[in-house]
Length: 406
Image (tube, rainbow, N blue to C red):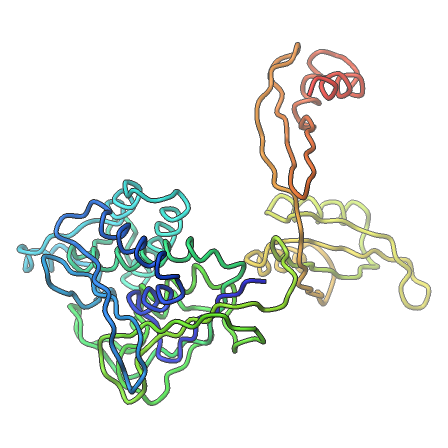
């Protein structure tokens, strides 16, 4: 498996991540990347790439120049009240909606634009929660937001070029102490950064200052599937993204690209299971319906023989990792179990697409599954069932007739 590992022992900022990823490209890819970034259609904005060293380590420093000047990232103070804006009338601001619209018009692939918008959604949600506001009320300072936008778009474009099978990151060093911003003095990590990194292993250490910015945090949360110590891997390339500030430790993000030796699965899901011996069939059926209704990938029950010869049932729920908590809550609420077993499962799957096809009885939705040299097409059950009831014809005959025309 082609693995990208991001070492965040000095935190992460958008420009540092972009510099580290940039160093993993070939010289030809680097030139193409610079040209693409400098022809996005932004007036008076350019990306400058330079070599810089920190504590004897040389790497790439990315500078976003706006009217020829480099702006330092200040993403923790996006939100402004009307009173604050009246005191800063000379500064222009753009809304969260404006940022998404700006991204949608960039001459980039849909994948890059979708990833960039998702990163900004994380930032916007975190800022809104930190300031007890809403996404509609969040505004971004124009200069700082354009600087960060270049960092976000650049990282998303680099990820598309590198196209790793999996992305992992280390636990994140966030720094310590306090920082000064428009709202006053804030603790490190800043509230928005702390919100974005919720659920991620972080640590403070002895270095005073803000090491992880909201932009860096949002990029890590969007792309990294897990945060853990570096796993065994055969490294083919290493990249260093150099930050602006000086610290006792080399201020850089390090990126490793290589082979993890693992077989590639299309995705990973969770299997939640429990044994039940004191529920009626109606109650078990209702629990299955609730699990499916709330987003389970599948749920099923198998008869089993439990201890002391008691008959029982094995309930299994398959779900995506992000639904683990909600599915567990439903199982505890709708069953009598006292514990749930959780297993991570790698899954290979065919891609699915849907389209409408005309038939003598009206439009029918056709599901097509393909991949691994297989292509199968099948009419959707709900459409066939509706036609069979309305036309008073056999479901079996209808299914055979529609399937033979595919």
